Length: 478
Figure 1 (cartoon, rainbow, N blue to C red):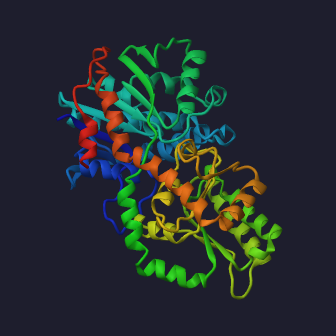
Figure 2 (cartoon, rainbow, N blue to C red):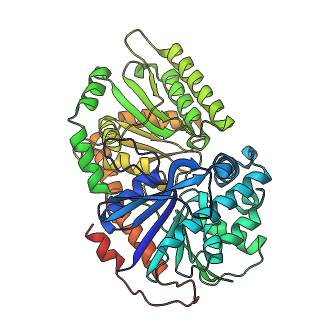
C-alpha cells in the first residue's frame, strides 16, 4: 500500500474535547486516522537551529501518525505573519490592497519552506507520496525537488485563487508560481480557482497547457479540482449526542423560546463579519416584530493577533456589536451574543443543531466547511436553514441553501428573515437536497480522489500511468 505523507503549517489537536481551528484540521484528521497517513506540521515551538535537521516528535493517531516540527525562530515571523498572512492571504482572497509584506518576509518564507523540505527527507522512501496543504508551502515542492526527492508531490489549495490581474499585483508572484510547477498535481476547491491559475500560466508565464497539464523541468504538473468535504455521518452523530449535553441545554434555556441564528468563524476580513452584523441590525430595523423573537450568536475566534489588520477588525466588530445591542436590546433580551473563543467540534455540532439559521457569509472563501457542518448537524425531522454567501466555494454544491451577496446588507437581512419564517416542508426539501450532495462528496472521497490522481503522475518520469491502487475502496471502508 502506498504511504502518504501529508504536510501543512500546523497539525490539528487530536483530543475530541479541545477546539479544532480551521477547515483544514477538521478535514484531514478523519483521513489520517482512518487511512493511516503521516501528517507533518509545525509544533508551535520555535528554536535556534543548529545544523540542518529539524527536530520532530511523532504521536500515533488511529492508523496514522502526527509529526510535529520545531520551526526556526529567526525566520518564523517573516514566514508566518509576514509573507504567508500579510501577502499571500490577502492576495488569494482578492484583497491585494492589504499587502504589507517586505522582501525580507519573502526570504524568510523561502527559508522555512527549505527547512521543512529537509525535515521531510526522513520519509523519502520509494513508495511514498507527498501531499502538501495550503498557501504556507507554495514553494515546498521546488525545495524538495532540489534535495533530490523524485516521488510524486501533490499540492492542495484550501483558499481561493484570484484572477490573474490580482495575483500578478503581489510581489514575487512569478517566483511563487514557477516554484509551484514542481508539484506533480495542484488541486483547487472550484473550477473557477483552477481556471484563474491556468489563466496566469498562459498570460504571465507564456506557457501552454494541454488537457489541464503542463510540462515543467520536473515532469508533468497537472491541475484539477477536488471540492473538499466533511465526515457527514460522524458530524451528524456528534450533533445528535451534543444536543442532549449540558452546553446545548444551557444555550436553549438562555434563549427563553426565541429562535437562534448562529455564525462560527475566525476573526478574519475574508469572512464578512461586519456585513453580517450590519445585516442583522438591518433586519431588526426593517422588521421590528422580530425583536425579542430571535438572537444571533456569533462565535468569533481571535486570529493572527500580531497582524495589525486583525486587531483593527477585532476592535471594529466589538464596537459594532455594542452599537447594535445598545440600539435594539432590552433588559431581558440581547440581540447579538458575541463570543471571542473557540469550541470543540462536538460542542459546535450541538450549537449548530440548536440553531434555526446558519449564517455563513464570507466575502470570498475556498470552500467553508462550517456551511457543510451546519447542514450535517441538523435534526432530520426539523432542520434549520443555511444562509450562504454565493462567493463561498460551498455554494457550488449547496445550491439549495439561501444564497446571498455578502456585500449586499439588505439581501442578507431579507434572507435571514425568510429563513426564520420558512415552512417545515420547504426546510426539509432544501436540507434533504444538501445532505444528498454532502454524502456523495465526503472528506474520505476527497482524500481518495486526490491520491488516485496523484498516483497517476510520477513526477520523476513525467509519464501518465494507469491507476495502480484503488484509493476509493479504501476510503469507503474508513
